[in-house]
Image (cartoon, rainbow, N blue to C red; front, side, top):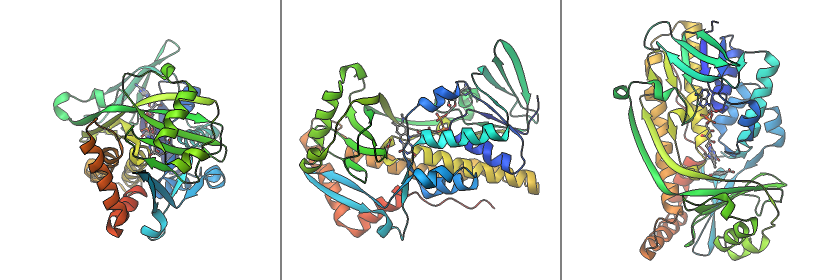
Length: 393
Ligand code: RFL
Ligand code: PHB
């Protein structure tokens, strides 16, 4: 088999890149380790920046997002028993975010790919990348016991944090930066109306909490938990009690509870791999970087990598511009490190790191300071809606 771009992974990065390339007539094959059902069962991100929305439009898969997504012009920070709204729209000259689940983004992209007939191999085993430092890279894998080889011109490693692409690079060619946080997020999904029409991020002496949503009748809530805890230790009742305890009294009173339809624990991590290009292989999205979810940046950063790589490959194929290939890492990393910083900062001011009451007071003072100053609120808002994409020229 032969293609122009072999894409490893059918998460949002791989599917979005594949779709954009396909619309430009650039041939690509996606190789994914799991089944489509498994990929769609992972409940993850919920907040899309305008850049990501624009990419969905460019990929001609935005119809359902425009209909079912909810535009959010602000969100709330709760601390010291009070609530401060960050007016995203007012503070950024009209920008907002959209609440539309990653599951839906993935489904829309999968449906479009299926309709177009572009090739995707799901449930591929033993995926391996070869010869990407030379001019003739290949990807091999096994499916239903049969070995396949794809000869390609470029490889996009869109296979997430645990994928094979980053691990295929010689250790001395890559530098890894990492911070692992000493806590996780316990998340539940429930068929209940959201407690607030905007997201609430809560700092509390018992630990962080987040009220989010997927639709008018589907809520997503998180509480900070210990890393050694198991979901079985968290009955729905215990979860709701803990969430209530961490919210301001009015909000806690309004909370509508119900049975959870999904419950999972996610560890929190900051991680960056440098560089992100190795000969004819590129790392994209979670394969190259992880942010703690506190800034709602993971999926959006994946989208900005896709934007950069897509335009570089488009110019490579349509205009013969070979010079841009070597610029991929530096363009992506400039934006990535800023999002890493914001996500780390949001995590540091909102979570409980120790029992030391001094830390709690410092966090409360920092939140009070930022939310009381125009400059402070603006810096939160402009990072939350997403920093601009760099033009590729
Ligand atoms: P993904 O989604 O992990 O997809 C990678 C795909 O590659 C496949 N794969 C392989 N395929 C072939 N061969 C191999 N050897 C392979 N190994 C793996 C996997 O099966 C998978 O299908 O990476 P991608 O596409 O880069 O997308 C990244 C996003 O999924 C991630 O950044 C976000 O979900 C992060 N995130 C959030 N991001 C936001 O922008 N806003 C949010 O509100 C937000 N909330 C969150 C989040 C992530 C969370 N968790 C669970 C980590 C909330 C949570 C709780
Ligand atoms: C979510 O709805 O899953 C969500 C929203 C905002 C975040 C993280 C997760 O910062």
